[in-house]
Image (cartoon, rainbow, N blue to C red):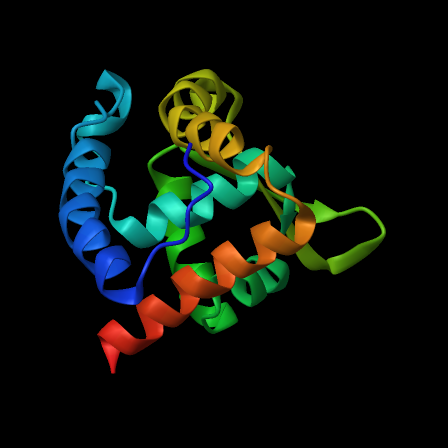
Length: 149
């Protein structure tokens, strides 16, 4: 990797070529056979990714992480629970809370499927300092916000 600087315009040119290739490659990641018929939307993928990497958690915590209302997460969890992808159980410490987890029957296939992207991000981010990682993530968040504006 070069340590030379990059002008803003050169960076934009590079990213304008890179982003469509990245999106195209991500879209070609094969969905496991047992999940193909479930009509999973991008919002489901984010929810599954949080459960995969952070483990079982509450609906409210998922809502916070996904930046949506708890009612929205409850609907997604209900949908995926009916399809057998997720399991719900009462929190033993507080029966008002529901703990959500990936169903054991789908854990391995979801891990294999979503783990590819996580492995690629790990390889890209590990060489960076914590400050560089923060700058990279903040840059992507700014790009997302500005494209959506």
